[in-house]
Length: 279
Ligand SMILES: Nc1ncnc2c1ncn2[C@@H]1O[C@H](COP(=O)(O)OP(=O)(O)OP(=O)(O)O)[C@@H](O)[C@H]1O
Ligand SMILES: [Mg+2]
Image 1: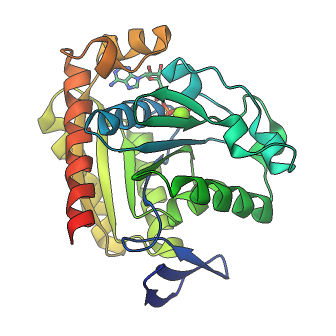
Image 2: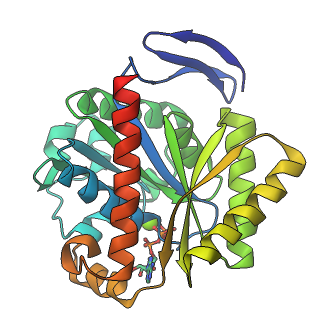
């Protein structure tokens, strides 16, 4: 990836040999991607709760389920998709047909459950979809993207276009190793210089700090990238119960430990948005 030039419309970057625009402040809508190396670490819970938390702060949030072939945000938010994103990719429907209003200030672009075609979109279809989402996102303050796990091309492409990337990891050794792999790919291929680490399934905030320090010390041996600990989220039964009931825990059990940590993450990201917007 080569940094090309700064423009009012965004930062021109080279990704996988192609020039594309990373939209930045002054360009299109501020974009945050939520990603991870290992699967099942809590990206969708973080995305759903963060989206609701940002909307509660008065921001207009467009939430994209970019785990394109395996939808889950609709379940986490209790939303009922009316149309299938695959029809948008085929040019048979518009994003407006697919869009689901979830709460005041929050709309969801849901993905497709069990769609092989969507899970394996070619680069040009993915870019077309991404452009349509960006166009739609112009009437929102924040575009929040819940990606699939791992270092697949689609996940990296969505993260590469974001202004900020949240990396979710757990203290599990395989999660730590995969988080490192994801950080490396994001740095090398997409020139990402800073990641907001969400330490999930931790026993204490101290364990979250230890996770950050361990990951940062591995990263420091090989490349330059700052890991900021954005939140330490405890293992909390209420998160699971809320997910089963189809609502984010910050709405269902706002006093639970998981909800408080997720709410604090949303305040931190909201503050970052306001700082970027006033710079
Ligand atoms: N802090 C937590 N405490 C307890 N359970 C949690 C916590 N975070 C997430 N979970 C549960 O873990 C499971 C996986 O979470 P989630 O679906 O958000 O992970 P994911 O990273 O999006 O997974 P995938 O890689 O499959 O998309 C869900 O059942 C969710 O309710
Ligand atoms: Mg998920």
